[in-house]
Length: 583
Image (cartoon, rainbow, N blue to C red; front, side, top):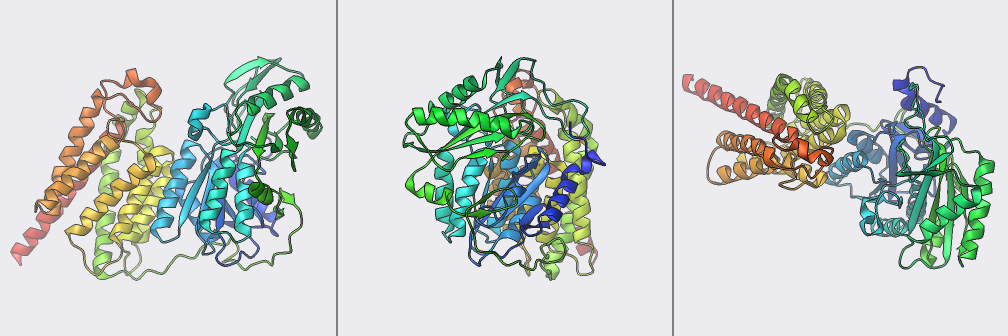
């Protein structure tokens, strides 16, 4: 049980604050995670890792020279929000670009992906390497679908060492990809873990049994087996990993025996000894192994074995020195401390001087978001019922949380005397939507709103072409991040007809308000037609039969929002025309 806390809801933040207090020589707190408190040479690639809390030493404990530059830290077993990743990466950026690396989990992919889009839009070149080492989560011919577990360490270590030597972003990315391909892991659990404040573990393993193929977020394994002896367990783990080795594996291998929370070090060492004998018997040379707690799952009773097959280049970087709170190797020259902005190293916001046109557009953006809030509130229960047919029923409440936060953030951004540009207003709104709503829809809506704002910018004047650019940016952000296509039964099935109808009408000479009306009608019609589709993405996919005959809730909510925005814009245009006629 996790027993030491005041309020379980504050557990992750308070634990991170205490970690920083205990390790100020290595890390400093920023909004969303931690960054190195020591100097980072100008032009060095920033390796930004992260994920949910509860996995220490991953992820914050791996920040320091020779390894990660920063870590974005989410709530317990939950992805950090896109805004948190963005702020951490901005604080870590030293001018050489940013490499994001994290385990292949849906929430992390969406939120880190949203942050990457935003960083690239601002001119900070950003790449991603997903860790996909868990052989239990997908077959070898679908390696890109595998999740990341303790193999995080090998990818982070080699990428971090490569960055420390001054290699370019291209080279650091290449080495991280190669390391991930040559890394395989498999885990077992003897019992589940307990979230702070919970009365029971997330799962139990029956007495005398072992769960094979567990995840690190409290997921149970894929099968249960009688509890083996240590020798039998070593044979099971080694044989399955060797059967899955990369094509060009070679004979030099790094074994990592990783404890998940409550297995004692003596037990881990005992198992490692048996694993090493099996590897040697298989003709492999063991190189600089690790044995201990490296990527945990709170108090889970379990462990995993990771094998990294080295080549000459990777071995050089695996052996390179590193100095972090939880992982140290070799010797590094002392790095001087750096002065960070404020006691928590906050990244100072740029001072914006909006043009008159941009400030007016910013005020209009606030009004439009208020209309979005009204239509979401009006249909919240309906959207929840629709989502419950083949999902978890949270679409309405998630949209409500997101839009409430977005309107509040937009109003605050525009509250100063000079106002704020549409870019500033929509960026604030998108960040707030993403962080408050969470989940897939939160990441997608947040990213789209921010992208539309960046497309509008802070200009001296605006024309219809700017509206078309904002529509295109909004849609592109969702399709690039969500990877859904027409026919998958998602919001995209209403979104693409909306875009196509808008651009066709606008290119044909229709004013923006008329083009928006045509687009909203197309979106609502397309949303209704999703009732005939089977879901191919998201949580509804396993319940495809139940979903048939009912429209997709994401497509429906987008259609409703598009129609409300269109009606609002039409009324604003009519009112302006009326005032002009009176004058």
